[in-house]
Length: 424
Image 1 (spheres, rainbow, N blue to C red):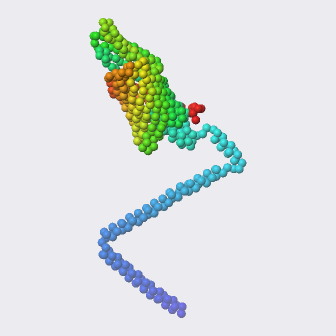
Image 2: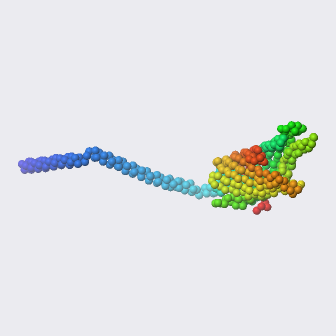
Image 3: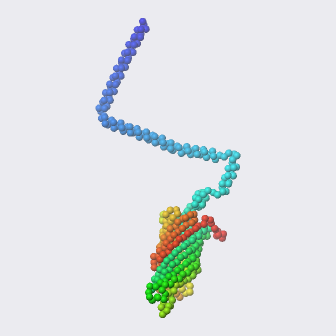
């Protein structure tokens, strides 16, 4: 009986406790609903939704930043891991076995004695020879300046072949004279020592003179033609690179020039006493000037990247012969050039010479002074290592200058050096 009573009491107590708990839960829900309704009454629904969207967007940005930071850490850490793995692999490879050390030494010796690898097969340079590579590239790019400054070192040799054609017309009333000249030549450039260069030019010339008349006074002459060919005037120069370009100081080159009278001297248009005491003219082609020249010049080169400015001024003394002095010369030039790329360069120059009055038996001939002006345009193209092709055209700008002079130069620079034993 006692057990039943105790069970009934416990059941009653549990029921009372459950009723209390249920009442408390109901009251809590009612309070939460009332507080929520009060909050909704205090904050408008649109503002609440807007604030909710902003919070979500901020969460999204935070997640993106965290992901980006994780990716950056991995990207920075990955190269370090790769370098570590590479170092370990190299260390493993670099540790030869004890039995293979002699074989590895022999293989290294054989590799060193064989032909080395090339940095640039086209330039023919050994691996690691950066200084020589830079010098070679500089010489190649400056080929269009080879007449303005010293390019070659001790023992360097370059041979330049040339072919040209010139046409000139002159009118001496009642005659019209046409001169057509074709030439070919070879020019040797050799580096005696660093900054000292010797140039020797050997030309061959063919000239044809044509004479016709525009007046009935010269019926005995009508039309005449005469030509001649042979060796021209051999010339040479010794050039010294006195100053190298640095800062505001331009590249300065001093030259000593000599020209011989090896070409056959012609008189060109010579007066002839014809029938009835009429003065006519004969034709005598000229392959040279017939006089020796000795002179000097100074050339300046200044780089204003990507343009190179250059100019020269000289004086040539023409030696008197047979009491005839054709007049000393003051040659000059002013030009510019630039590289279109690492193989093609363009240059333009204004060339001229002021020729003083001629003398006969020590007396000056009035009106014999001349001024010669011409414009030269050239394109220098590197065909292969050491080989260049340079077409050019020259237009006469004054009456005394040749009307048209055009041709092509083909310089070839030898890869090897040929130093002279007595130049130390």
